[in-house]
Length: 140
Image (tube, rainbow, N blue to C red; front, side, top):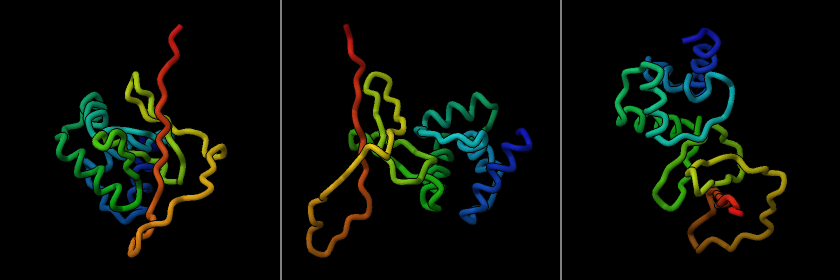
């Protein structure tokens, strides 16, 4: 692993107090090593790890992504009630979901205005609002 990627990954884990195990460092390097934000599924990260020569199981990838979310390093965005995408950008922002490629990308947050949310039921509070804008390419 390149020194800069290792350093960035180690720092990322350190900000959340996570122990930098070999597998966590390897997966963190794939996620944030180049300084760019990522939207991954567990399966796509598993494939990227395999391509990079990392010996890691799909279960370990799932568990590591869950640990990263629990530590506040990532957030999960669910599309269609089942497909989970893991986002390294933890700021509040909307997403585009490209139906033809099943890709999740960031949408510009400065253009989104949510002016009025329904009141939460008694005894509940809104914890977050996920906005996923589904897109399909025009044909013709």
